Each structure stands twice: as structure tokens, then as C-alpha cells.
Length: 552
Ligand SMILES: [Zn+2]
Image (cartoon, rainbow, N blue to C red; front, side, top):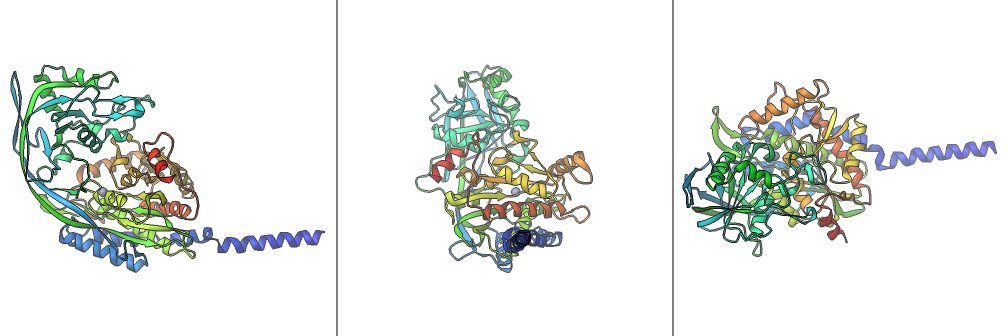
């Protein structure tokens, strides 16, 4: 008996060892060792060099960038991801509008003049050489939100056809603590300007202006103002695309105050009352006239796609994404006009490339396919990723998850893993597990009111129902702590974000956090790629119902 027991034990031990050696679980830690700072630096310094001219769509910078990415995909061993090519054409339209310096708002009592960039920003997405509003009545429509699940309708009792609505930024939950009221301080999609423009168009408004306020918008007025008067890129609309309002734009807080007070309202009181469900929109007793002449140009930019085919279920896939585009050559700042975008988004491209290398380094191919996706025109409104999400290689119902990164600051080793959009889906559990392996802890984005979850390419996937992650170490620096990390991030955003100074700086850049984040994302994707389940959105997610409709 004894010897048999021994034999059985030894036999099972041997088979256990054999099994674990050949199981894909065992070489994942070897595979991830190819991820290192030397490679990341090589990608970042190349993509962020002046030679790439700021990687703007439709320029020589685009040609250089997409060909470089293609060449690296080939070297790594990824297959062409779109109909035998590494490129997917993204049909776009470029509109350059001549915005009048001054617009007049007339009321019976008095007229106000507003100055472009100082008081307002405006543009049109109508593809035509002239857009005109004549005496369009201005209506204040609260937050401009129709949200049946919160029993909320800012357009109730209002007929805004042909009129111009003025709405508040963010959603009524901003700066509140009751999590049953929208998502309290966490911005819902209803808080984003993109939503507000879409809703105003659905309501038939001829124009929409959002009142800017730095806190609830998540960025100062100078951010949207930076692109004022320059040409705008849009996805070329399909024939049956919904028609947008003729005029879209922003008003500064001070300009809105002037406008409301000239209409006889107490501005502060009125905007506070819009936080209540009973609120009804009101006419501002004034009209807006404006005319914009436009130049329209059509062109294609390109998404770059590389694939590892799954060994068992190649029709199902995990997406890694990082946009390749940046702002190109722009206004001179301190003698430099090239907006290199080394952090935005060179570091994330490097992160993605390293993950691809790790997957190629596995002894066994993943069961599901992996798509490495570098979309174009993220900076101008997530255009490339939106186009892919509606024209995908893998059906969105079979796309298991998207793991995206953007703006990864090379600050060095971090103790934390920050999840932007924490609580949205079961993917949070995968992050927990992978973070534990690195002795890091998971924390939600500390500023969920800024709506970062809606501001990079993973959102294009979320919008079509694919559970999506935006994760990286960000808040707790291993050596210098939390305050230092926070200060560094703030400084970088103020001095370098979307500026020519977003370029490689050997004096302080440390890629070890990006190495860790690439290993973390590799582990998450590796697990997803070898499972046969689909992670779900959580019950309170605004994307859950979209997924469920598609998966049935
Ligand atoms: Zn970016």
C-alpha cells in the first residue's frame, strides 16, 4: 500500500510539473521579460523626434509615423490586421471656418457683443461653404441632458427647433455626494460636451453653446481655445448620419453671466436651479445671428493594425490601443513649433509595442486573437477609433476587451495602479490580480469628475459595448511618494501638455513605470486571451445595455 501511494504521489507530481511546464501559464513570466526601458526609450525618442513633425494626420509626419509603425509590427512578427494590410483607411473631412471676430446678441433691452476666443468659440460641422443663423432665439436648457434612467429631461416642455440652446457643462451630480443622483461627483457620459452636441441635434436645435467652467469641464478654457479658428477634422459622415446643429461652441462663464443678466436673470440662481429635476428651461429673450464661411476638403488618414491570430478561437479578440497622431506643427512657443507628442502618445505606443513583443515571445500562442491598434486622429475627437469601432475587423460582440493607454508620464516606478473608469466592469478584477503580482495596489482615478474615461480611444470601444480599460500607475511614486507624483503631473500638464515642450528629456525621464504598466497589461490580456468567458459591464454602467443587446 505504502509503495503504491508513493508511486501515485510521485506520478502525480511529475505529471503536474510536466503539465505546468507546457501550459501557457508557465512561460508568461519569461515572455514578459522582453519588456524593458531600453526598447521603450528607442520607440519614444524615434516617434517623438523632430523628424516625425508632430505626427499630424494628412502630413508628411503621418507618412513617416505609419510606415515606422508598420515596419516595427513586421519586425515583431505581427500579421497585417486589415484585409492583408497594416492600414485601414479612415475617410475624413476637414473643415476650415472663417469665424467672425465679433458676434452680436440682440435683445429688446440691449445688444451684447462677444469676442471670438475671449468670450466664445464656435464652429460648424455642416459640410457646406456657408453656415448662417439669423435671429436664432437663445434658450437656456439646463444641462442639456435627456437621461431616462435618472428620470431627467432638460428639454421637457421646450421646443428648441431652429433655436440656439445654451447649456451647462458636466452633469447635475457634479460636486455632490449622493451616488444615486447621476453618479455623484463622477462624470457620466451625459456630462461630456460630445453628448450635449449630439442631444441638441436630436432636439432639432439650430445651435448649441456650452457654458465653460474649469472645475466641471475638467480643463481650462484655454484648452478648447487653443484650436480656435484652425481647421477641424471629422469622420466623413455617412448618408444617413444624423444632422448636427448648424453651430456648436462654447461660451466663457463670464460671457454667459453677461448674457443671462442682460436678459434679466440672476445668473447664479438660475444655474443652481438647473440642478433640480423640476427645472424648466427658459428663453433668454435674445437672439443670435452669425455667418461662417467654410472651406471643405476630403482626405483619408490611416489606422495602423497588427494581429496575432488566436490558436483556438481566432474570431474572438483582445484589443490593445494607443493613438499614433498628435498636433503636428503649430504656433511657435519659445522658439519651437514642432509639437512632438513624446508623452502624448509616444510612451503609450512604446507600451503597446512592448506588449506585442511579449505576446510574440510566448511559447504557445494565445487562444484568442490579439489586435494591436494604433488609431489616427484621436486628438481631434477619437476619430480613428470611432471609425474602427463601426467598421471592425473582429465583430464587436466577439471583441472581449479593449486595453488602451494615453499620456503615460515617464515618472519612474509607481506603487499604484490607477483605473480610470473604476467600477465600470469586471475588468477591474483582472487589474487587481495583475497588480498584486507586482506588489502594487489599485485605486480609482482620484478626479472622476473630469470624465477622463470618455476622453481617449477606449471610449470608442465602450460606446459600442466592449468592456474597456484605461490603467496605469499614476499617483504613488515608489521613491518620492504621492504628493511628489501629483505635483509632477500637475506641472507637466501645465507646462508641456499639447505644447512643443512635450519632448524627450534625458535629464529626468524614467521609463520603469511604463515597463511595469506594459507587463501589467500583458498579464491582463494574456488571461483574457486564454479564457472562454466574456467579462461583463457592471450593473450601473451606461454601456451594459449596449453590450447585452449585441451579445444575445
Ligand atoms: Zn493622447
